[in-house]
Amino acid sequence: MAEPMKIRATLQGDVADVRVLMAHPMETGQRKDAAGKLVPLHFIQSITAQLNGKTVFSADVSQAVSRNPVFAFKVKGAKAGDKLSVTWQDNTGDKRTDELVIRAGS
Amino acid sequence: MKQALVLGIVVAVAAAPWLPAAAQTPDPTAAEFDKFREIMEQDNPAELFEVKGEELWRARRGPKNASLERCDLGLGPGVVQGAYAQMPRYFADAGRVMDAEARIVHCMVTLQGFKFEELAKQPFSSLVRTPDPVSLVTYVAAQSRGMKIAAPRGHPKERAAYETGKAIYFYRAGAFDFSCASCHGVDGKRIRTQPLPNFTKPEQAIRAVQGWPGYRMTGGVMHSLQWRLNDCFRQQRFPEPGYTSETLSALLTYLTVNANGHVYRGPGIKR
Image 1 (cartoon, each protein chain N blue to C red):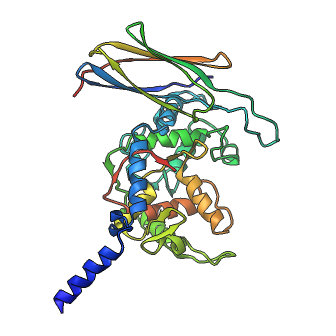
Image 2 (spheres, helix red, strand yellow; image 1 turned 135 degrees about the vertical axis):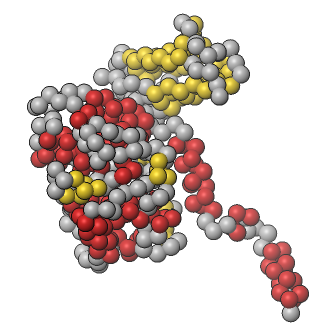
Image 3 (spheres, each protein chain N blue to C red; image 1 turned 60 degrees about the horizontal axis):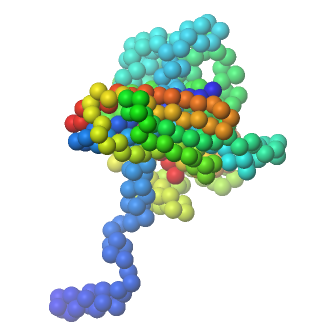
């Protein structure tokens, strides 16, 4: 089952610096388990971020990304009170969405 | 005479232009690693385990269907804030000094009804499994982020644990005739690229506490201090210490008390 993400957004002017930590095994399909059997491919395939329902970031991801990965990107035109949601979907169809309300910058 | 010496230095510098400027600082490699760690700490996957640990802390679980919110970590039942920085400490209900993970496991057994034998069967994290106590101790540790380490020394049992821990630290035995102090008793030692802190000194002892529980980037596994000390014993070719045993709590008392007064930055990230 998909575990929660950790999203952080720091507002500087109208640019939000977003950092997302995702809990995922990101199996490459190359690794063998203790019994010598291949561990099947299991990786995040796509990521989308929406600001107030409008897609502002999307990415296709391969199995070359590490376990429990971090993604960072900047969103222009963000302001305090905006709702940011991040969704990932993996190759098994499992998905997870987490939300965050952007707070005023310090 | 003085002029000749100055001249000598100038010649030496001129003759060795390939020496990097950083070679003049004590340990440039360690400094670079510290920089790297600082960047990695900003997005530490340990936080994922912190979130999971918090869920586990609040959830009603185990045969007794109870949450850990009544667990006394030394500051009263349910008080988590700052508790980690003040452990190991003596717990009257258990009659012994306990470190954070020992106490959490104690609560899981007494409050939630889990079997200790079951928890101790596979207590350490692997690629496919992170035991609940590891996530829980990560959550508890994170609630002491930015606080000063203040392991209590008031109770006679706490002072006795410190002395026992100290004795274990310097006890040489095993196939290699090793003690903890063989690696961590002198300044400036390293193994491959890893600097080995001298935990007998207060300013370095913090490095036994800081960074734990820690997320190890190699393999992407969350580890606790119980695992770390267990692995130290293995590397010394000592018999395996019991999980959350008094031996480990005593050793942790020695290490933590040495680090008293230093600020704990929360769960860490490792190479």
